[in-house]
Length: 118
Image 1 (cartoon, one colour):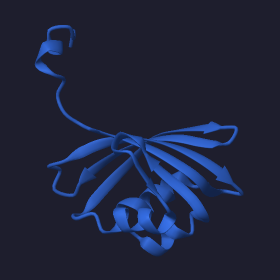
Image 2 (cartoon, helix red, strand yellow; image 1 turned 60 degrees about the vertical axis):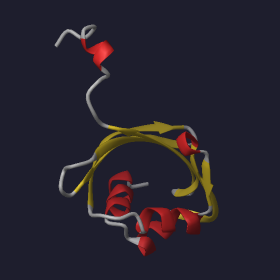
Image 3 (cartoon, one colour; image 1 turned 90 degrees about the vertical axis):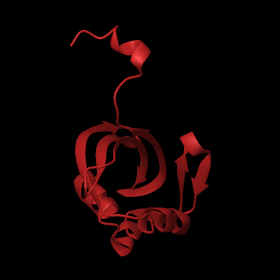
Image 4 (cartoon, helix red, strand yellow; image 1 turned 135 degrees about the horizontal axis):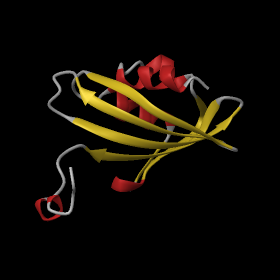
């Protein structure tokens, strides 16, 4: 699977291109918000999300069942960014299951800054 292309389709919110990456009965799970999506629901959540976005694929780690990716997503105006860890289960290079963890970028909490040696 071409993960760079997949993530480009995500950030450009290309509904038709995204649909082609998934098996029709795939499940997409966002544990942090306790959401489980069908492909149609995921496409709606991703493609209707407001704003323009960019993304940088930072790492792909292949697994026996698929891959894990790390991506940095940013708003086009650079006012917001986050990191996404995604666990892909694949069958014939199409997504059967996708579990994603989103974490907002930002400074560490004040109590922890004194622990860091930068």
